[in-house]
Length: 102
Image (cartoon, rainbow, N blue to C red; front, side):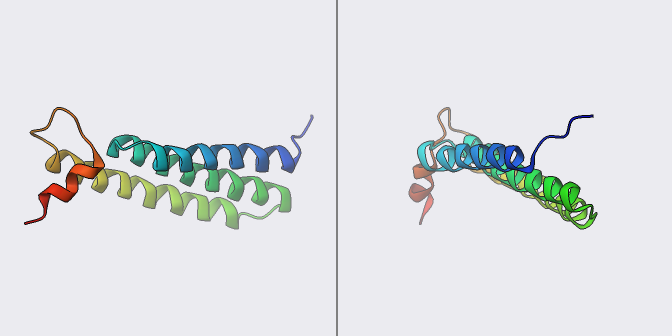
């Protein structure tokens, strides 16, 4: 059985992370920003699992599971905040939150 070198996992995680960073910086839609943050979390999870497999340790997989749990909670709470904040709007922009100040 052929194994994938650890460098390939690191390269893929780096590409995923920087796509997420670009998505957060460039896009102004909060849903796209949340998906980009999730992509960055998944890049970190990929590295945790890849290094856990490389070093034959289960700690990386346990941490990846914890990160997935926290990311799911973050996505649920963030989505609820976005939906309640921008419910009457047709177009959603992060810069519009400044208009909500009293």
